[in-house]
Image 1 (cartoon, rainbow, N blue to C red):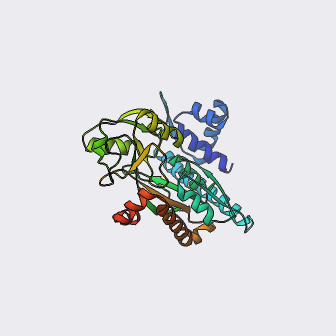
Image 2: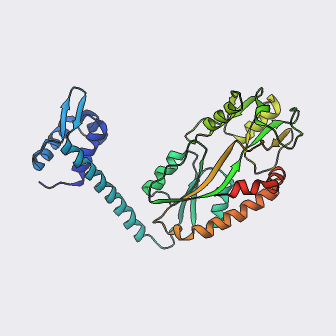
Image 3: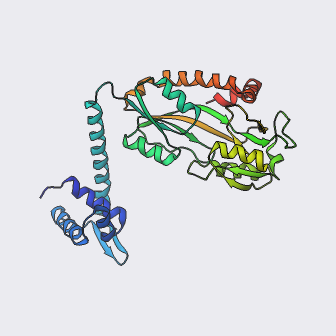
Length: 315
């Protein structure tokens, strides 16, 4: 007998699942088949990899060493397959891009010209997984204070913009005509917030509100901009708004004093992808395009010129 990839996968599956039954389901095998295969592997190696317990199985010290090496080898095989496929692709193969639906995403598509395929994905975990497996070459991601990105060693990253979040309030709000608003001034208002996700945005907001002495009264959840703006106008609710863009009738967009609410827009890329050689140029093009958007956004441009630029672009 010789150890094969399927043997490594079987042992790792048992270790991950903690039981032969669950491992069999994961591998689409019967439990007797998994038991037989494991016995053959252990007989071949001359040692026991798992101890049978009332709750399932537990790795022996020998098993722990085996699983550690098996995981490493399986990872290397995935890398070998991905790199080989990359090397056999046409030099004109498109760059695979995904990211959050931010203005940076569209600017990056433009910077990559026609040789790109793209899709918007909000979930941080999904973007990270697709970069890790090599199904993406580059991604526009976000992180909020308290929930930093966790990227693998073969993925590079760079901050594009530290964006303040402004307050969207109805035009009849007592503070709607001011140049900015303190977060504490929104303590008695009903809020519209996006659906909670793995970005940490909602938790960041809750912490900042608590820091100035109040708990958000969230009345509505929506991630659709047109719904959010309608709720501001029609129900008198308030909400966070990203700074870029015009302000529709019936709504005031106000900077929040001290910029307590912020997201960092991050460019992440696989270091073994051809696009890695273009990162400096791409970042310059995205930055130039973003600056034009700032100038087209009246409230943001005023904030930017009043010292906000240093906040937004500082590393």
